[in-house]
Amino acid sequence: MKKYALPIGLWLVFEAIAVSLWLATDDFFYFWNFTYIGSCIAIGLFLYQKKVRYARQIVQFAVGLYMLVYLGILSRENMQLEGFWYFLFLGVFQAAVIHYAVAKIFGPLVFGRGWCGYACWTAMILDLLPYKAPKEPRKKIGWIRYIVFALSLTFVGALFLLRVPGLGARAVDKIVEARRHTSLRLEDVARLSSGLKRARAFLIAADHHPGGLTDRADLRQRLVAPPKQLSLF
Image 1: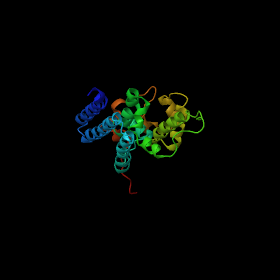
Image 2 (image 1 turned 45 degrees about the horizontal axis):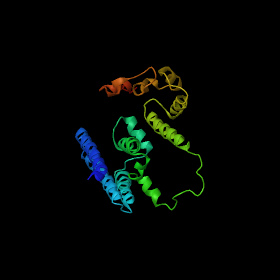
Image 3 (image 1 turned 90 degrees about the horizontal axis):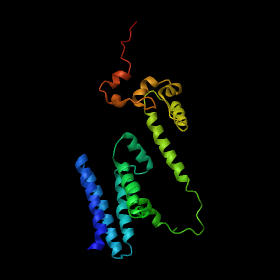
Image 4 (image 1 turned 45 degrees about the vertical axis):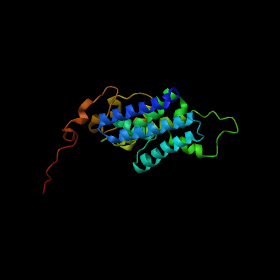
């Protein structure tokens, strides 16, 4: 029984996460999602210990197709890095944020880099390709990942800024470019954009933290000019 402690323990961890998120959010999806993934991985580890030849591939297809088809295509969830930044900026602990927390951060920290080889649709697709091992020494281009990381963050950040009232595309470009070199104060934003009065409730700067201003019931009245009766003559 001891040799099956790992799959059983892993399944219990996923069940604890499933029940906790279900009770905290009152959303049954979390119970189903983590129960399914945890059960698949536990079964895969059990089959691996039994020396079943295609144990890892079974788990890859079970979890990978679930994430790709159900979450990605049917549910239209963005589980990639851009989706992570998007939900993180919204302050919402859902979808890609949970995926990255479990699959990209805490999972690899506990189980090592091989974790994604069992629970990742990307690994599932890559394993289907005929390219298994490089014939030549790999090129040292690992720095590309940091460029992709920065571009993803900049892209999603720009999308959020473009939705802020009072900030146009040119102002957003200037703010993004300036933020690469230093943090901005409210007066710096004022020099970059003429719409600061409407945008300040949605901005956080080095010297400006609006707090709960965006949750005020009279936010629209504070930002939008009152209507005026047009003259007929």
